[in-house]
Every structure is written in structure tokens, then in C-alpha cells.
Length: 331
Image (cartoon, rainbow, N blue to C red; front, side):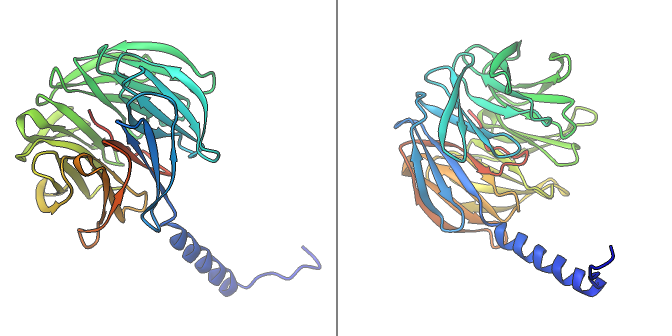
């Protein structure tokens, strides 16, 4: 436009570089939300300081797992003691709705289009489907025994439900909300995640001490990885190169290389460790340690523990905000 100076390409490049640096600096500015079952609270951790900056009491009993809307505006806390989900505005940290779910409401997950909340209910062997905008249940889907966790493929066409009691995965067509297939998994099937490209699905099977790697295109088991000590929580790194698995009895985080499909590292951490989440930049893990009432922070580059953070009693579920599609959750 006339009368205005045009920026030279070199200046534009400098500005873009400075913006990138700012983004990187802000990359550590995450919150990690932790559900504390025995005192019915949620601890919020600042990942820059690794300190608890707030503790809230949503109102439900035995808060178990947490998920976020994709824009980070809302948190959803599933309560196994009151069979419901607390919907919390993350900015004010206030409950804006309490949504009924099934028996022992357990594993919440938001569909990739952001419109629905699906909740796995191990007490009623089903999944509650909630319209987030209307804040009401629109469907209930029967699945296997003791469903623990819901994971969606990146396109949002399929949902995978880990059923700990029946030792399998229910595959659901998201549009029709019908079970279209059941994939055999080990007893105690729990922690589940899928790579960003939708090609590999991983699930822990704590009752038989293994992690199953499934080809999500063919729905065939690609490899079964042995791991003694009740593998439980699981999360895939944002770049899809590694998976991290917590083992309750062994008290280690196993690092799985997703190219070789082998455990390449064991990181000692906590006591009766349970669920693991990863920051969206992939640089840090956070693990709930139930018998020490704490959260263990691990640097993924050095693969060493960098902090132990006291939280509430019996910490279980844990997820980083903003959450992306990664959610730490299991039974």
C-alpha cells in the first residue's frame, strides 16, 4: 500500500526467528493436572517450577482421570465414586457442569473434532457419549468387561476401548457409534495410546506382564513385548518415536523404541507408579506415584528424574494442559 514501508525479507526472517524463539521459550509453560483419589482433589503443577500452584475440589468422589478440550478451555474429571464427570473451566478453575456417566466413571476422552466426550465405565461395561455443547448424554455403547480407557485415531473415525476384564479392545466406528471389531489383548488391558500417524496402537496388559503393539491399519498384533512388574500406564511421544510405560510393581518407566519395538531404557521412579503423561513438546514426563503421594518429573533427553512433587493422597490420573491428543489414563 502507498505511504507504508515494506519490510525487507531479511527483517521478516529476523521477526519470524524471534517469534519462534518466543514460542520455544513458552513451550515449557504447561500445567499438569493430577487427580488425588483419597482427598477428592485435583493438584495443578506448573511445569516451569515443578511446584503445585493450585489445589481444587471439584465435588466428585474419587476423581480418577482427567482430559481436556482441544482448545484447553475445559477440563473433564471422571469420578469413580460418584459416577459422573466434573466439567471445569481451566481459566477460572471453577466447575461449570456435572455430567452423569456410567458406573465407576473412569476414562474420559474428547473426540478429535472436539464435539463429544466419551467416558469408559468399568462398573457398567459401557461408554457414555456426551455432547459437550449441549452438556448431555446422547448415547451409551456396550463394550467388553471393565473398560478403562478411550483412544481415538487421529482422523476421528475410530475409537479403541481397552477392556481390562475381558482382555481385549473394542473398536468403535465413531460416526455410527457401533462396535465393528474386537481385538484380542492381554488380561488387564489398560494404558493405551496411538501414534500421530495412526499406524501403531499400543496397550498394556498388566495381568500378563506385557505390552501389545498393534498395527492399527490391519488390526493385527505386530509384537508382544514382555515386561515383568505389571505394566500399566502408557503414553506415546508426540513425534511417534518412543512410548513410555509405567510398571506398578517394578517402579520403573520403560522406554520403547517404536522402530525396533524393543525396550531400550528403564528409568527407576517412585513407588507404585501408575499413570504417565508427556508435555506437548515431548521434553518431560510426569508420573503419578501413589504410595509416596507425589508426582515424578523425568527429562526425556537425559532420561533422568529431575523432580519429585508432593501432591494429594493417592494420586492417580495425570494429563498436561494443553493436552493435544495425549492423555495419561488407565484403571
